[in-house]
Length: 171
Image (tube, rainbow, N blue to C red; front, side, top):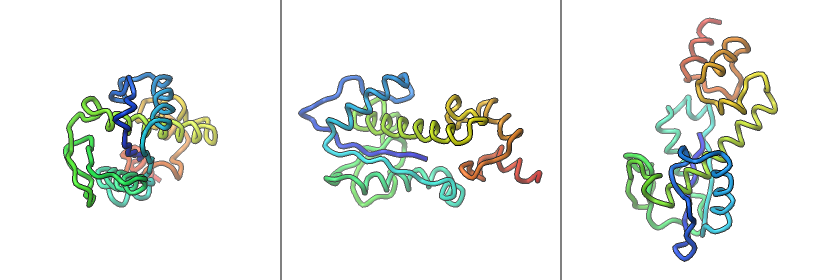
């Protein structure tokens, strides 16, 4: 689970910021560079597979968000968070449903998080090429599910992920 926090410079707007899922990988990567160059502050943080298994995906997402917020320098004064709930942080703010399509700072954070996650999947693919992480990016595609069945779970797989859980219960 990867989350990011970004404080944009109002004097240096970045054209093209939108929901990361609506952008090509090439466009996300170009925007990632621009965000890192022009933002007043940014941070990318993660929650581990063990944390996700122990907390659940919702709480682990909020943990990663809090870590990203805490890593900002300068610190944030007000949060705009994509979703319907704030991550339980002392900084005041508001949750915005579909915020990555409505607020440039949320879009910028979603882009940084997606690019970082995709890079993690490429690194995982380099270590375990038979799983196809470079193609499916860890999403539960038929290719990924078939690789799990054929090769078994890796330490990087969440044990609470239903296909992994099913497989481990069969062993």
